[in-house]
Length: 278
Image (tube, rainbow, N blue to C red; front, side, top):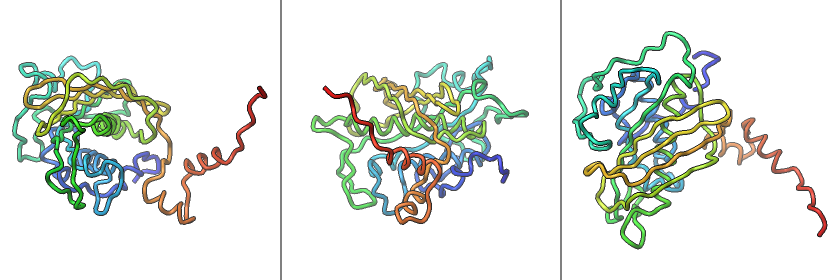
């Protein structure tokens, strides 16, 4: 592994369990190792592992990566849109191929290190809206609905957060940049309500990615009817050496602390100057 590899933190994530454990089920123009990495990243951010008590784990653990593309912004031939020109977004029901490369488009070939502005990443994720009648793996009821019987706003916000972020990770893995960080802004528009039994299709696109800021857009469709349910734009601030859950647990025991965590701790320890006297 190269010392200049900025993806070491992401590559350390464990292998994703179901439903993100099958590379052949993902339509992509990226190599298999990058597809697997994206599956691991998605599962990690919903803490999909045994005994997880992370917020929203029971609801988000079913979020599945189904499509993954990185393409040139200047390309005249857009294989993704070309395959959808006769169908509205979110209505693709094609069965995945059992071959190692289910996507007929050519693999992405990068001869020189590309600039992030030259490329665009597109990911598609899916999840089923559940009503809580079936217990989750933890024994708790996994309900996504509010008192009105529609998908709860905070639940959809969590999905939007993780799904839109996936486009930035997809782009980052190609240009050797880890976009892990904190959300600084999320603008959400609800167009229609999602109800029990719907399969939600999240279509995510990267807008910009720099060491200081990343931005992505997400559109949510009812997979069956192609009806637009919600749209959002998220802005994140990447933080180098962002502590993982393992680092955070070790830091709590006084064993280690990442540079980023040390800076945050030092900032919190500074006294707040008194305000002006009234």
